[in-house]
Structure formats: C-alpha cells, structure tokens
Length: 133
Image 1 (tube, rainbow, N blue to C red):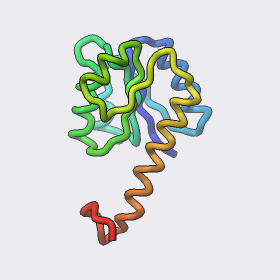
Image 2 (image 1 turned 30 degrees about the vertical axis):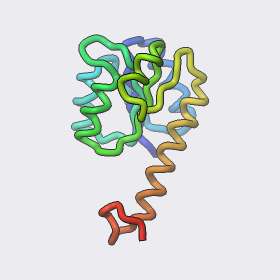
Image 3 (image 1 turned 45 degrees about the vertical axis):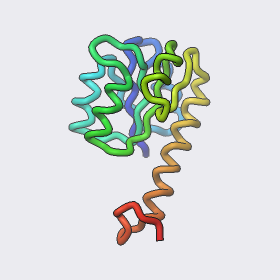
Image 4 (image 1 turned 135 degrees about the vertical axis):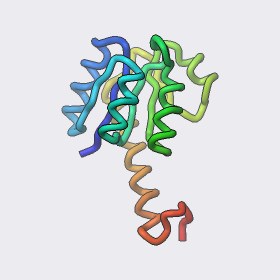
C-alpha cells in the first residue's frame, strides 16, 4: 500500500483529499503545516506528496525541494489556487488548479507512482545506478 502525504493549511481540503486517497487504497498522512510534513517523513517515509503552494512559513515548492533532499525523485503534485505563480517557480512539478477533481488527482499520483516503479524494475538489483540495459 502506497503512503501519501497531504499538506495544506486548509483543513477542509485535506479532509476531502484524505477521503478520496483512502477510498483508493492509499495509506494517508495529513498535516496542515509544511514543517510538520518534514517531521513525518523523517520518521515514516512516503511514496508521494500532494501539497498546496501558498502556505504560511514555507510554500509548496520549498517543501518539495526539502522533501527531495530526504527522498530524491519523490513524486509530488502541487494543488493550488495560484497555478500560474507555482508554474513560474518550477515548471517540472505538476500543478493542478483549485478546485480540482479529486479523482483526477488520485489518478495523476497513481500514474506517477507507476512510473517510479517501472523505472525501479528496469534498473534491477544490478543496475541501481539508473542505467537501462
């Protein structure tokens, strides 16, 4: 079962996302503060993160950068009402504009996790350097 971290300072948003990910057979951790997200990951590694962009003390892009230091290649999605601003910061991270279709969000994360698993399986135990034989 994949472990997803949901980070948003809006409790109603995390409640909705938690329900849809749980119904889709994900293990879910929810926090409303980016610094709490960093603490969770130190104790309980995650498979993916969904975060808001505009939050107090740290934006979603900064959070993802810090999470990538702990878990390189971690699948991440930003869900925000400020999509243009988030895309200007880093166009490589998928950004979904609020309001978002929750099923679409789960499907995007599922696809990202499948991509990660595919790459890992292509590497195999002998090719963990990232080279495809």
